[in-house]
Image 1 (tube, one colour):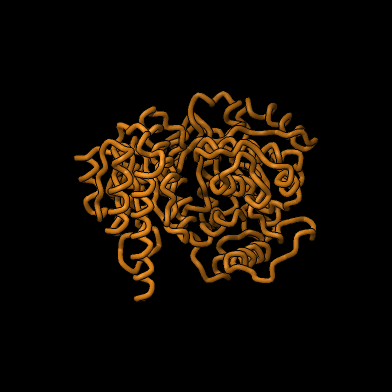
Image 2: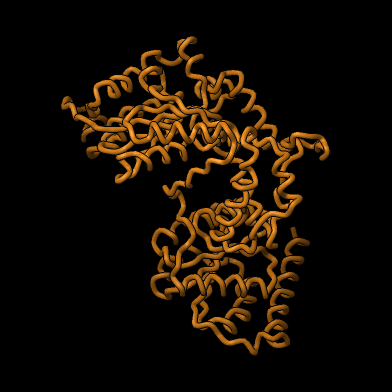
Length: 481
């Protein structure tokens, strides 16, 4: 521990000297000072000392604080353009979650202020998560002076222009449907164009990550109800006890925590389209109630006796074999026939290989703009590697792969190495498999096997793995299953 402290003190001394050298012996002195205000939040005195030397030579005003406890007050009094935020503050706790918490607080109360995360190398994954939640960029310690200044300058420019192109966290924005040239997708497109203008109930089937939600939005966009936004419900994320309240609403006093009236999803979707994703996860005990509402087109809130008529267009989606579930008694036959007036099947990405590169290039442009990266396209080697991948997680997996590659890459073309694809995901053996399986990949395989064994029944899978349904659901999202 003593050796580590001596080493770290030496690093800070060197960083301070580097700052001085950069200021007095580089071209920095000839550069004009930006009329911008920077707030640094870092509990390390040595780091603050080094930045106190470096930053004021380039920025008009610099404030440095040691604790996020005074962050929000300082924000109101100092009114910075950019915040340089450390990700860890508590001694002996280096999870980076503190940085994510304070990032969320900043983006909630001061959405116009840009945040640059200050992180150790081990916390890069968390910093990437921070960018997804609205951070402008991240800088890794020990930092390069020129890169740190350039990042802060770009953040200041973005703040000054006021063009917030980055999507906010948890956005409801939906990507546009891309049809591709395959025969299956062209046939699907023709069916959608016929069905969309009607009010027919639609069941969309397909593996996870194929874009069932995107297809649902496309149907809604082409319908007569497109003037109002579609209401979506992720059935898998709703617990059994909250199902009725979330779907049909409740009145004040209906149960212990019902402190006010609550409008359910069906009532929210009155006059527009209701999209029930992962319909196969509706608990058997709740399926009769759902069927009754769909048949009668009316709801009764929990704790009330009054019937409320609803006018909706229903679209459902699932990755499960509902017909098999009906035979096994896990899904009501009458509900199954009620929701599949028209069935549309989305093929997996491995059957739409002509779309892989096109989709990947679209994601490169999307995330290069979102994260302010140089990437403009894919190298030939990267394209070939993408075509060889199984994409068991389909478009969602491809999107996540490209997003990560864009964030890490510093070149204009994404290279094959930037994709960080596992050899086990490739459809041939030209790349040798690693003998050291990671804990994450082992967990993913166990979950995939359980999902296959129990035919996608989340309740049975969660019970077999001895974890809660919400925990299982988060893992499924994480691994693109």
